[in-house]
Image (cartoon, rainbow, N blue to C red):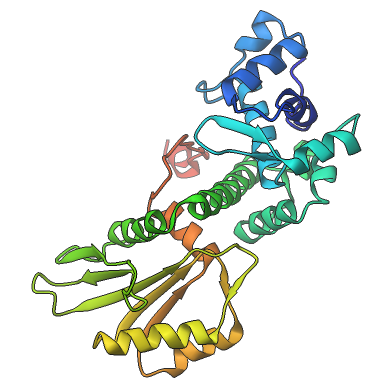
Amino acid sequence: MIPNYQSCMRPALAHVADGQLHRSREVKEALADQFELSDAERAELLPSGRQRVIDSRVGWALTYLSQAGLVNRPSRGIVQITAEGKAALQSYPERIDNRVLEQYPSYREFLDRSRAAKSVESASSVEQAPAEVSPEDLLATAVAENTAAVQGELLKRALALDPRGFELLVLRLLAAMGYGKSGAVEHSGQSGDGGIDGIISQDPLGLDRIYLQAKQYATDRTVGRPTLQAFAGALMSAQGDRGVFLTTASFTREAIVEARRVNLRIELIDGKRLAELMLRHGVGVQAKTSVTLYDLDEDFFEEL
């Protein structure tokens, strides 16, 4: 019998306990061996027909472990245990599941993002009472959890970039959003740049400009009023009147008030919104699966 994704969590974590880099594919095959799946069970596909069931369940187990901070994903298809993950193996010798993961702040933040994206209970409640949930709710829950998971991974990868890489990411995002289409998107971040990391020219002559600043801070940090005041000063020095301040962190209330107070147009984008925009505009992500739901056409039958 193919185990559910929660039953895959501790075995997957134990498989990477040596601290080395492991391929996700290797972990999936190792768990298929450990659970002694038959050839038929190994070959069983999801309804979409695009992925094996065991691959999906181990993949979700690794995703949730990553959201809890028990494993890292330094690059695509690679998994590595963290110090927290090693400690979890010691603390929970029998089983690690959603209830265990809920003790970790980063996992609770992930759940909050899921619930904010769609007001449906977490995936664990769906597994406990599948008959009470419609196909639409199941799909909406899956989409919400996938969205929250990918947004969390996007922020992690953005934080892992060097400062220049992060500034280029921000410029790629704004270009994908349509800024600079008639002009140019220019990276200017360097020592002595006066707090301006990029310039978007909205027209070919560069007369209509938007100035950018990108700050790569830990997600639990905040950007305060003094930093906004410094950016406003840099804008005025550049004779600009429009700016975008992006960060992986969040803004204090005072910073938000300052951005509204100054006689300039400054748009603030925090880490949560940054990840949402990257996902919406396809920056750093790729579409994986498309699903169509059908409903009965009552009008068709009434006309017969």
